[in-house]
Length: 437
Ligand code: HAM
Image 1: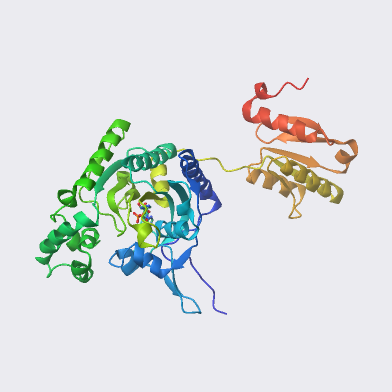
Image 2: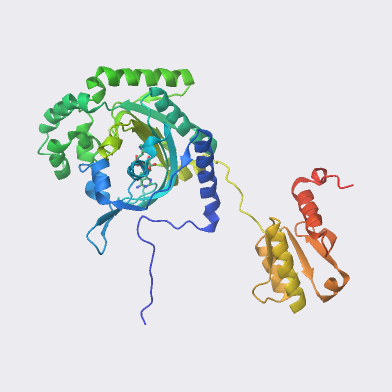
């Protein structure tokens, strides 16, 4: 029979137990920072009606034109694995009547996303986003508060040296003039623009500004910038945001070239860049999308948000030597000699686990020697060997695997308490033991 040699799909990653503590650290920091800012978690389906993304992300974007994983189910519906989190959240907010609840709605998520891109370091086909969405406020204070949250998440993870770039891409009214100017500019280059951008020239010339082709992006470098076309309201919003960021002491640069790759944005857009993680340096991207709720069938409601790529946060955190939570090591390995002792260790392990200790015993059928070797391999902090005599005497010798020190513990109701003392003094020193007298 031919050997089956199935590999994971290109652009996907396995997160093995050796790496998972780093993920747990980052996810934990994201979650607790979001909760500190008053955000609640929302979970939406992995796949959505394709029309949701075409409508929100935009049919002239790279994401919709080139990167969606679309599947047809046995019926007649067409679904797409979510390429980003915002569209599904806004759909869920509308569908679940959450627009009738107190504003602003503040929601966060940690989710897989799928984009059929050319894989490279920091760019995957299945990746993970931590995202935050704020629905129901048009105040620039909200923009600043959201940016402050993103900055805090990076700081709490231990990622230093990121740069915040902000821009305003206006509203549909100021964009009409800007679109005309872009069309005029790019029309001079119809011989050199890529085929996709030629089609964008009519449909949505702003999308040419984030084309990944080096030729198109070279041409786009000298294109008119939206900041010169902002209407009074958008200009005022942007000026207010800048003055609030100044007052908050949050450093930023205005980069008039940021347009973001998704169509739903209005007014503020921003990105956090981490220069030392390679070509895919944007660790966070976001902005306002004041028209999206209404576009998807809800009442006219302003909104804004951001998302961070967790894979990129991980690369950045490692570069910055950030600290990660430790793996849980085995607290005690209970070795046994003989059937009665094995059953005793099973029972003890259950009690220990119930009290919150990581306890292991022999579920393989190893010799005593092999059991002790295994205890060493898994870095057990303590071990105990239980035989028939120990059960009869009701005492077990608990050995500190690092120092070889022995404590005799009674195999009665006091065992859990006594083991807890032994472990506490091992981890923190004797002075941390509660006075039991
Ligand atoms: P985005 O800029 O497309 O925005 O993605 C947000 C972040 O996800 C990026 O800054 C990057 O860190 C990460 N990311 C994107 N694509 C990949 C990929 N192929 N591989 C690894 N990481 C990736 C959004 O998705 C918007 N929904 C953000 C938002 C939320 N705007 C408002 N609310």
